[in-house]
Length: 186
Figure 1 (cartoon, rainbow, N blue to C red):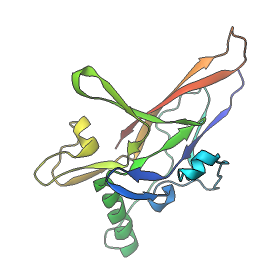
Figure 2: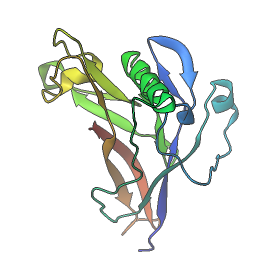
Figure 3: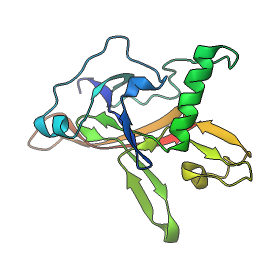
Figure 4: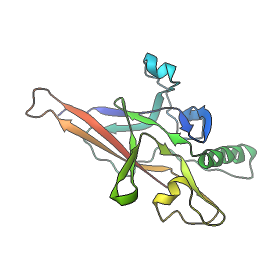
């Protein structure tokens, strides 16, 4: 089987708590060194999609673990760092969501809800917050490790699982991606 590269594209971030969407690069996330924008269809343009390339790349059918994309550090005593941190915290409080795309499919985040059911969302949060009185907000409720009072958690690590159908013994060659699921972590 021929090895091929799989690119991850990013879209604007939005929130149900704010009407203002942000382009991916408005936050201080890892950026692709050479920006590449795929052509968007009319529907994407009308809905305000802002799809751009990301630094996340994979090789088809090659498992990878713990691949570092970039490192960021902030000094809260420096104004530029303090502003970037403040903006990320504001995005977490307003529950801004990433929207990633692999092979023209949304990357989904699935998590357990009541009665053993799963809920899948075509986006995932940039992080979560635990209030001063210890109440986990938004995505913090799905994992008991997010429990420190008055703490912001940035989801700066993700696990991505790509599911595909093989064309082996079929009428077509190659493979077709059928799902891309992500689990945000810190």
